[in-house]
Image 1 (cartoon, rainbow, N blue to C red):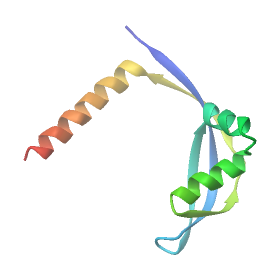
Image 2 (image 1 turned 135 degrees about the horizontal axis):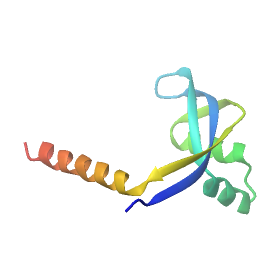
Image 3 (image 1 turned 45 degrees about the horizontal axis):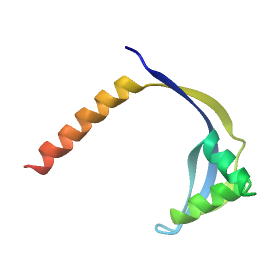
Image 4 (image 1 turned 120 degrees about the vertical axis):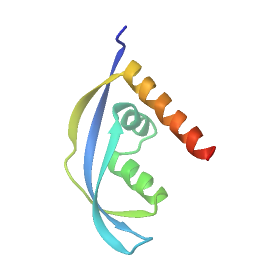
Length: 96
């Protein structure tokens, strides 16, 4: 049986300053529609949400580009199988 799930996301190109390395770099932050809607419910703009998330990661936002909207279709069965293989590999490695 095929079980698909579609997630609507927005990918924001960012220019950030990494405090751990002291370097400026380009990043791509992908947010779901649900994350953006939750921020709006509490009166927070997408830019404020991005700044808060980056701040938690030790980054300062220098610039936010225009987001690209995408619908991502996921095969939940395939994801589950891949995750199971991944976990099995982690357990085997930990047992070494």
